[in-house]
Length: 423
Image (cartoon, rainbow, N blue to C red; front, side, top):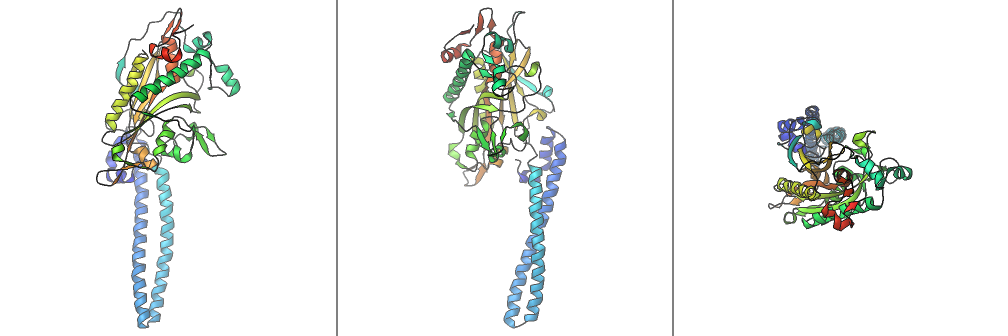
């Protein structure tokens, strides 16, 4: 959540930055500041009333001591009127604070100054590309056909058990999933991240803390009886470990990694772009999360980008990195780099990771702070990245590595899965 003080003191900066997302947010900022101004006036009037009532109380005491009961009674009547007016002002202030909150939480994070202008994915900027795109034969198959050919995943069985978008991994399909999870975790641990195994359901406070609520409420599975939400990413429970916590400056940065299944209701319509593993309701992902000092967060973001690059290169996959434009960034992000691998059989790029710096936006919601050198509490910066999301990684491995003899397994995964070919 954006700090109200920032919107008051740096209004034009906030408008300029949020305009990169959508010009409509300029009006929202004006609405926030108008409600805030009215609330401040109400509070100021409350303070004046209270000050006047205190002054009258002293005078009433003096009049009572001097025996002027009539004068005292007259001032008591004035005090009663001030108290009644104060109650009205207090109620109005509470209403305004609720209105202010409801509008303020609709404002997304302000993009970093380096974020490109633009409203759609087509306006994202490619900042890096690695690897040669494999040349496949004319008989090359997309991964959804390879999955059937080698009996790796059963989508129909998943539909029977649960519904569309909940695949059942079998045999070598299950083993390569487990291999990727362990490989990604081991790589993160070697890079200094501490493994966390968090709950898969969170309460509404946790969803609000990381910005999924109320922004993405309709995209989350909601267990209504207990008012709990299935997590869309490990970012939510891991970051919320530090909700309402004051950290020590010397403990920063805090680096965590976690593997979890992820649950998202928005699986999209049928079509080549969402077939097979391209988009699912349930999928596996390894997530890296950092709690950082504000002065270090962008250097740490660069480190996280290098970490994800290393994973993809070890998997021998061609990839590119996109610097997302303002309109294509997530609600909570200040700067996001998306990683995409090239699916040769589909002839298209597939997103496999988003790596983001949220600056203090999540921390303000979480009330996650550290005590700085001056002894004052200061908001941390939060960051996270997919390292990596498994479905589209598996899709590109299957498609790009298909040969007449079978599907070649990347060398780094062989020790984890125990086979070098799927045939």
